[in-house]
Length: 77
Image (cartoon, rainbow, N blue to C red):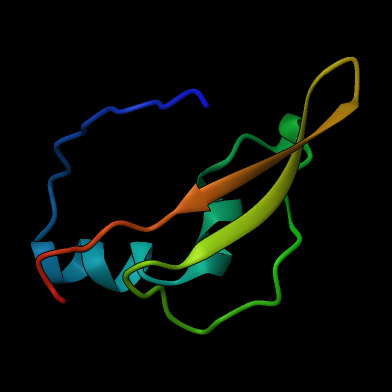
């Protein structure tokens, strides 16, 4: 399995960032529209440690690719 790790500094408080990123539906907000992002897992209102979210993107020639997103423990756990 491939793993991608990255980091980003945002000009907002940790509480503001957590309020946005802890909602799985917001993944669509941060994914470029041309990727055709679609959550396949039944939506949860909030993200939790150990959560697995299954989603589909169409990154190349509209060919679907199914991916898994694992939520590791956070400072809020």
